[in-house]
Length: 380
Image 1 (cartoon, one colour):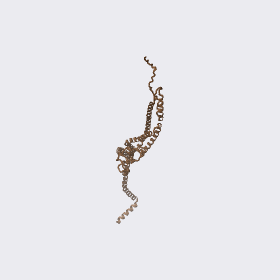
Image 2 (tube, one colour):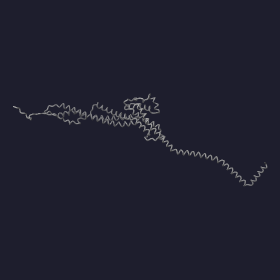
Image 3 (cartoon, one colour):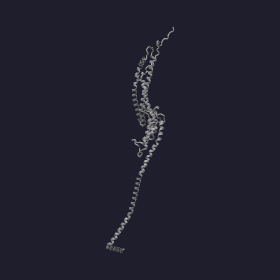
Image 4 (cartoon, one colour):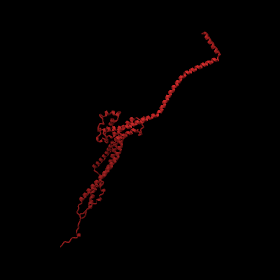
């Protein structure tokens, strides 16, 4: 007897279950912050338990472990991205807080420039670190990880200052000429100078060069560690012409302090401009600033000539008046000498005429005179 085929309805075929885990339920809220990571394992267990197919002897442990692994990797990836973004935000804030002010302070070239930069650097860095730590607290990071991130942020602040200082040191010649021009062309009230005879061009030129030299001294080295150095004194004594400073060189320095590639008491990593470079830059600076000085002298001489030409007619008039007065005085003296004899002769003639008139007017006098004359003749 042949076996009749079993109808398909009599067979119960159970295919291998294809389980699709509802991973869409794992959202970013399950990943961040780190305080919710402890819930991941229980959530995965719940998801896998819900996915069990009835009447099938299937162990979901391996799937659960694999899913948990993927979730942890994804969580770490997202957290790292968030931390990098947070770190970049605070680095940008430090860059904005330090870059511009550091450049402005270096451009002034004052003696306390680096003291001001240190105060600015410490204040802005500490404020940024406090806010950064407050933001990191939401992620419950290990102390080692937090300390490393804070260290990197602090180093970023220092590198920002150093980068700006090196950038300004590369433009030191241009900054020195700008500083020299400002001091030379404007007075202490920032008013344009008028090169009159009262302006001491030599003293003003020395003052302008001194300001430029101090600017180079400020930019010669990085000074974020409160260490003292003698860069300023070395530059003043070696490069500033004349005056008492250059005479002290043999007392403070046994040799030329600029004949070296390093500064005393300054590490090479903090050196921005070497002593030899300073010497070369100063020679170029003096050569390129001779023209403004010569122009100032020319303007002063031109002003004196203009004043002289405007006063020349008045001076000529005064000289002419003096000559005329002298000539008139001599002429008056000559006339007075000629008038003396003339008046005497006139007086004599007048007397004689008066006597003749008197004789004609008195006969008695005439006869008396005749008798006297005759008696005189007889006696003789």
